[in-house]
Structures are given as structure tokens and as C-alpha cells.
Image (cartoon, rainbow, N blue to C red; front, side, top):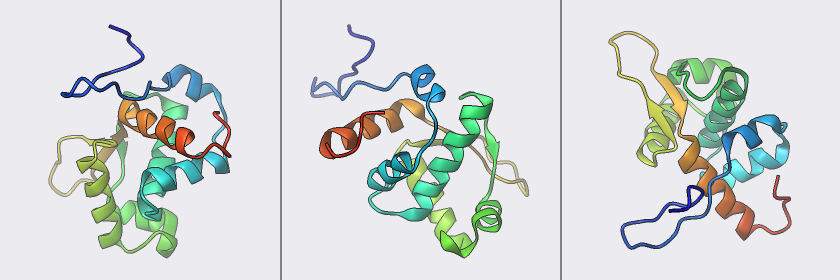
Amino acid sequence: MNTNTETTNDDQPLTAAIPWDEFAKADLSSETFVKLIFVCDGQLAEATILWDLLSFHKARGLDVFRKMSATDYHDEYGIEIGSEWTIRRATESLAGDDLIEQAQVVRNMPRKFRLNWVDLSHKLVAVNNKLPGLSRA
């Protein structure tokens, strides 16, 4: 089986994933953020959280969880991306879509998240294919 392509239960091939090593060498750009907004169906809070995790993982690697709660994201990014409730809903939505993974929740501690690169990269490739005006970087 080709390691760059996965299949669904219907044996329909998914779009090939972007190798993390290749992506990690590239600079994050405004174009990447635009793609994240498309992946998140226009939800700015979700796109901002993914952007934050991409930046974090580029610096620290994919295996590390980042300690961030809705309060932490709200404090860091302010009302531009929404209230704590909006951000909590965004993290729940991203986790439900398998774009982020949450570490085991410990009472009274900030939640810890990490990016699910494989699922996100499939969606980024799909956005590239739908928006031919954006480069393939």
C-alpha cells in the first residue's frame, strides 16, 4: 500500500498527506493562515488555534502537547478571536474533527493539545486543490 495515501472504509483514496519534515522547513505565511481559515469553514478562533499549534510544533516537534486552556488562548489572542466560551467551543470542534488531540484532562490544570498533522495535512492538500490561485507550498 502506498504510504502517502490512506483509504476510507469505502476504499476511496484520501488526498496524499504533506510530509511533516517538508512542511516544518517552510516558513508559516499569511497564505497558510488563509488555508487554515478554509479548513475551519471560516471560523477564526479555530484557524488561530491551529496556527498557534503549527507554530509551536515547528519549534518543538509534533510529539509535544501545549498547555493551553480557553482562558489561555483568550488571554493571548484577546477578543479578536472570541470569548473564552467561543474558544472552548472551537477546541471542542477541532478535537471532534480530529484536527487536534487533547491530553488527558487533569482537574484545575490548563488543557493540553497537540496537532493531528496527518488529518490537517489531508485537509490542507484538499484546500490547495480547490483554490488553484494559492501556491502549493
